[in-house]
Image (cartoon, rainbow, N blue to C red; front, side, top):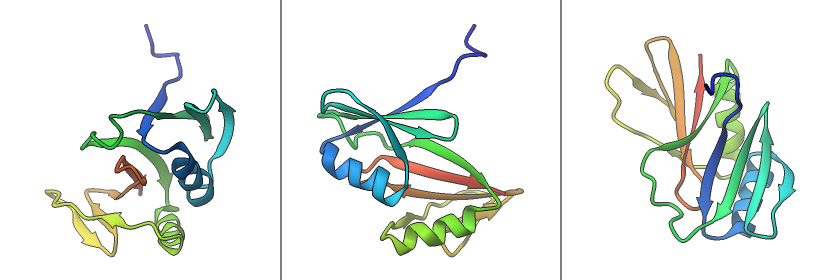
Length: 125
């Protein structure tokens, strides 16, 4: 039923101006729409990310968005760190931590948070 439809990630934030600085300035996403100051739509690859104002921002304690970055994960982590992004470190069975990247079982994964605490993820090889 939905296998041929695109999906969009939705991220709740408390302060759209602060979120805009992070998603555009830090992550380099391009804004494609602004819906009256309550919702900003970003393009990421062939997908969209809706960043919207909500009183429930930062209450999700699970990964909200994953970017598949392949072999570029190390360079992207380094670039984001240079922009002040702090990476999260988790105890993950079967994965070891190499700098800020969890490695194991043929994958590399790095987690970080946006200013509202939404958990974001880079997945590589």
